[in-house]
Image (cartoon, rainbow, N blue to C red; front, top):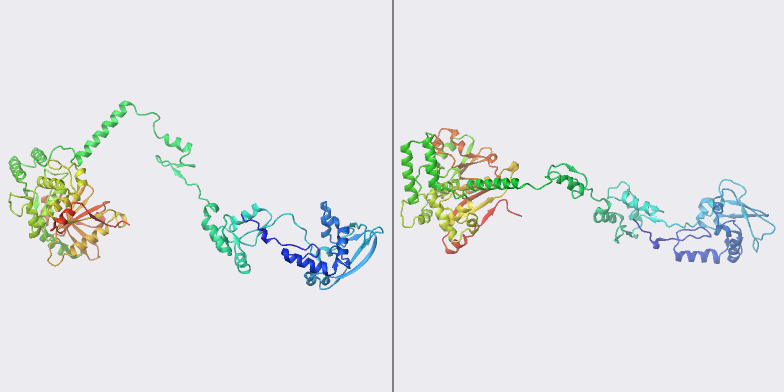
Length: 606
């Protein structure tokens, strides 16, 4: 609320009615106009020879008016008729321009007659009493209209610090500030702020809520709206919903009523011992199922699962007995030497995919890796071996490059198998364990218990990086940790893959990309650029059988690439990770630095 400033108080001359005087101006005016010059009684118009006689006359004849004891005396100044005094009649003529220049313009020097009756016992310039009485009423009291005398008001007037509004009640002024000056576009502000600012630039405005001062009403109002907005417009209480059923709760969610409502959703008593036992049993069963799903139950391995599933295939008529024994012998040989038996491989894919893509009418450009073989899941790894099969696809491509072949051949040590040999799943598990023992990816080793051999544990992108880094092959791990397009798509992933294959055009060796997402992994062998500018990934999936991959042999069939093509709408997993082979770690420093996994996050954190 605006406060009353004592420095702004102005004085009013009680003798002639002149207003708006400071204390110093009031003293000079009184001395000049009423002490040194001739005086005229402001109440009855009687002229006096000296100021002493005038003061004596006012104190004696008009004492009751100066210090009224009752309300009727105050009405004297507003009496519309001339005043009469009982006693002898004295006729006095005066001109308004002789006593005050303030009233000259109002009356233009007209002569006004005042009848004053003085009783025989009274004296005009001496002792005695003059008793005024109201005798008649007519229009226009000369005491009011000529002198413009204002009674002293015992109440203080409070002025708004932002406009010219005044009020005797501080509460009313406070309400005016809160309503009229709520913000800068308030319709109550109008031109008053502009006028006040331009005409009284030297006037200081005080914030009604703090001690800040400003010479501009607009600046002060802006200060109030910004600094004290919580007082002028406090935030309305937010509604709360029940965290269990979602029903709208009245009042604070921490109130007793809300607490009782939330507690009503739960049983009043704790579960019985039998219920607790059943709950623990169910949790244990679900935990074991989860462990089995991710191969963490230590139940079975690649070899055992292969034998079991082949036996089931024989019982179901999917495999003959002779095929069963033949596959069993091949499995034992592969496990003993650590080389994949090649029973699920489809070779020479790249030339066939290129031919089919080039025949497509809506494809303007096809970018593919140099070479890659497809490895499908078999009886021994179905349900958990996708990470190993995609690793075999990547290795099959690297083996065609002389430099990478030399690094990969270190797997075999003294065995010396053919240089095109691809390690089996069991051998890949053993190499990753060796890398862990050398200090690669310590956190990943702890998560998997530092053990993979003879288990069905899943592997992901970090284990692939660990394997290749241990073999001194340099990798880049790219984490597309959240969607970057509408509807959960990943346009940044497509753009990155396009740049990867496009930068390798010109005969340079280009390996495929390892693609990981929640629960599955695949291999990106290339990308298509369509006429409308959209991109389509060409993806190899281990879940596709050799019979399905055989469809690629028909290069004239446009539908043969349906298994491989993936557009943005079909890639909506929450997160993707890509492993790209980008060179070799030749120095010992690079080899040691590769023990700590480092990745690129897209989009980058801010």
